[in-house]
Amino acid sequence: MTISIAHLGPTGTYAEAAALAYVNYLAQETGQECFLCPFPTIAQTMMAVAQGQVQVGVVPVENSIEGAVAMTLDSLWQLEGLHIQKAIVLPVSHALLSKASSLEEVKIVYSHPQALAQCQGWLQEFLPNVQLIPANSTTEGLKYLDEENTATISSLRAAELYNLPVLAHPINDYQDNCTRFWVLSLEDKAKATLSLSIEGSHTSLAFSLPANVPGSLLKPLQVFNLLNLNMSRIESRPTKRSLGEYLFFIDLEADINSHEMQLALELLALHTETLKVFGSYGVMVVGSPAPVG
Image (cartoon, rainbow, N blue to C red; front, side, top):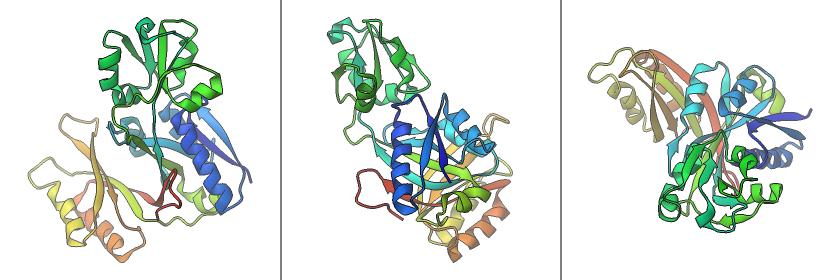
C-alpha cells in the first residue's frame, strides 16, 4: 500500500523536508512507498488527516528559537482521533532569496511568521527599513520574487528547486536553530497503515482544568513528581471559552504502556476537566545516526 503524507506546502518548505525524512525512515523500516501531498496551511494539513483524505500528516510543533506553533496545538486539541506516531527534529538554516543585486535594493521580505521571527535580529541589522509580510509558508512568497525589490526567507533547498539566487545565508539569529515536527495519523489506522509499533520514548497529552482556583494546576503536576515522570515540555494555550482559562500541553519522557504512565493517567483524570492523550512515539533527529526511542 502506498502511504499518502500531507505537509505544509508548496514544495520546498521545511515541513516537506521533514516529511521526506519520514519517507526515508518508512522505506528503511517497512519498505513502504509514499507520496507527498502539500496543503496551503497547517490547519488544512491536519484536517486532511482527521477526515481520512491522507494517511499521515507532518506538522511543525516547536522551534528552538520561537517556541510552540500555536496552530498545531490548537488544531490537535480541536480535531478528534489524531495521534502522534513520531517526532522529527530538523535543523533549520534560513536563506534570503531574491533577484535583487544587493541588500540595499530589497524593500519587501515575505516569509512564514516563524521564519521572520527567527531572523528578526539579522533583519534589524541588515534590512532595518524593509516591509515584512507574513505568508502561510516559507515558500509561498517565492511567487513575488519577479519584482527585483522583493525577497523571501526560505531554505537553500527551495533556492535549488526554484532556481533562485541566494542573497544571504545563513540569516537565522542562532546557529543551532531547529524545529520539531510531529507525524500524525488517525489512531485506529496507525498500526495497520504504517506497520509500525506505536511505542516510544515520549508521551504527549493535554488537559483542561475544572476551575481556575489556587492549586488547580499544581495537583496534576504533582502526579508527575509523585511517579518520577520527567516533563520535557509544558505549554499553555487559551481554551477560547473565557479570558484566563487555559489548556496545558505536556510532553513526558515515558512510554504510555509503562506502569507509571498508566497510573498517572488514572490520577490525572481525578484532577482535570478534559484529558486527551495523543500517543507515545520515538524522536528522530535528522542528521543523527539513529532515531531516539
